[in-house]
Amino acid sequence: MSLDTSIFLEAKMRDERGKNASRRLRAKGLIPVTVYGGSEEAVSTTIGQREFAALLRNYGRNKIFTLKYDGASSTVKIAALQLDPVKGSLLHADLMRISLTEKTTFELPIKIIGEAVGVKSFEGVLDVVTKSLEVRCLPTDLPEAIEVDVTALGIGDHLSVKDLQVSDKIEVLTDPEKTVATVIAPRIEEEAPPVEEVAAEPEVIKKGKTEEQASE
Image (cartoon, rainbow, N blue to C red; front, side, top):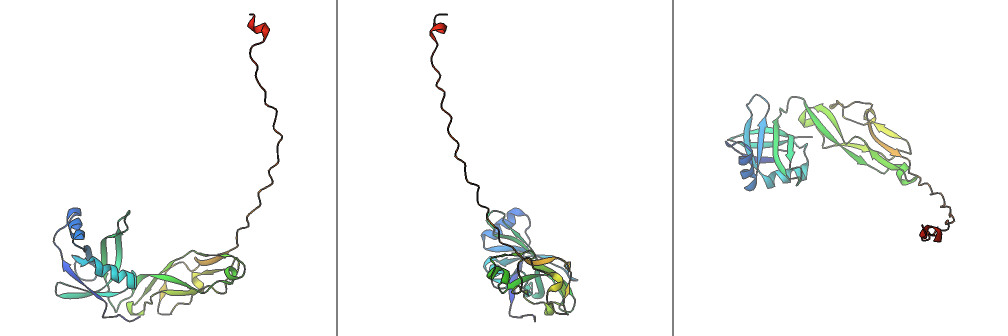
């Protein structure tokens, strides 16, 4: 994957810190962003909320892009996102500067393709256990995702990390024995045993006091 120089975001330096300052920025449609890594010091910036959301929506969290700020530019990737636990809205982002000539560790998503024969013909259930791989490579060698074809999986079959087809330019750091996807046998619903009809016991009707009790 070559770096697309047309993908960039404009950022502005910020001086204010703290929760109140961040809240005011978000009210203006800006996201507080910290940029760090490389030989430069960490800096605090802001990015337009709409622009950042569009980047995430169109390219995902793994996209390498250019960040322009303070008259300079850096190649960066998203290192962390802080989301509102209730609303799910973006509160803060960390961007890490990366070198295009040095290998970097990435979280590479897995993309499932095909329909497993165990699902199509035997009503099994595909269970995707691993959603991403930790890999190390040059940024320019990083694909958008690792495609995993599950077509040949029957009931009880599985694919492990070691079974995946990955470019020799990419070093996979995830445990090679870790299961990626498997097909589970369909659940057989057991028929409930017939309910035996139990003859209702005659209701005992309590009478009032006997004549002998009444005379006491």
